[in-house]
Length: 145
Picture 1 (cartoon, helix red, strand yellow):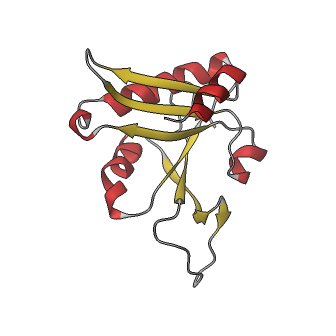
Picture 2 (spheres, one colour):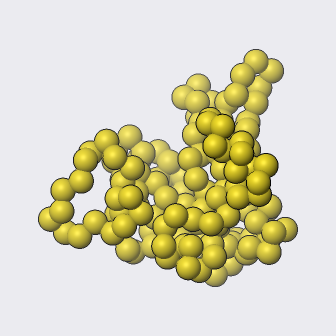
């Protein structure tokens, strides 16, 4: 986790959460109050950004608990909806399934590269931050459309 996250946290631009055990950091994630993704930014919807869980801590509810905490904190700041972006590649499959299980759905705008839509037929670097964005679940605490 970079010093940028901590500086943003202290400046109120994002919330940074850590999941810890007795010996180490198991996970970290941030809720960015102003998304870089235009549809979220224009709608003033904060974005879960860089939710990372250590491999040994996966499938133990850590990500679900962190998302729940973001959902609880957003309304306190006057934001009743949160969204997220996720990589479209097979390695992101487990977290894609988790987001769907939690009720998040693709926003139907396709994938993005550098927070801009990728038109059909355009090539982008495979190892780049290409994302499919998900809209908030309906009827969830703190996540009403």
